[in-house]
Length: 65
Image 1 (cartoon, helix red, strand yellow):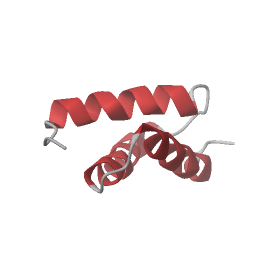
Image 2: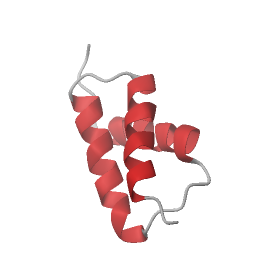
Image 3: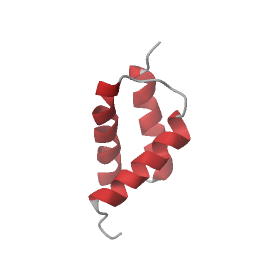
């Protein structure tokens, strides 16, 4: 697998977030935390489904009620 650029990783995270977390409200201050979780998943070899599931799990924990 070739190394992905930061921009490519960001695009994957953005697509995964919108696919799995659309409509879930979080605080603006938590957006960098979501991004960091996404980067960790991608950098440890996670595919797009793992990325979506990981982001959704984290976002469910920090969602605004």
